Image (cartoon, rainbow, N blue to C red; front, side, top):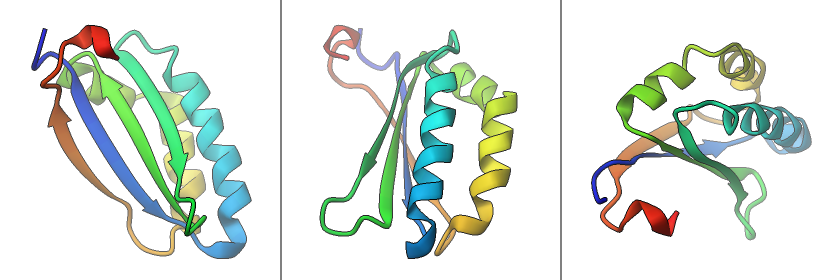
Length: 104
């Protein structure tokens, strides 16, 4: 059903010498995040042309799922671990789905 998923795209620019450390920390966070009941998807993508840029594609079963995610130990650990790896502050945009949930 449309408008039931809460989608967050997080854009991250990482310092060049810390790309691999960021990947490792972020993939560990993603593996734990998909186990949360409020998470429908949690994908990490890396820019082909600029490997210092990542997008986290976070899909939640509503805003409550997104809020609960920010309270988890693995998210807090990730947030603190990668803070110094950023080349600039991360940004995010929030969306809701227009297509049916089944397409996810």
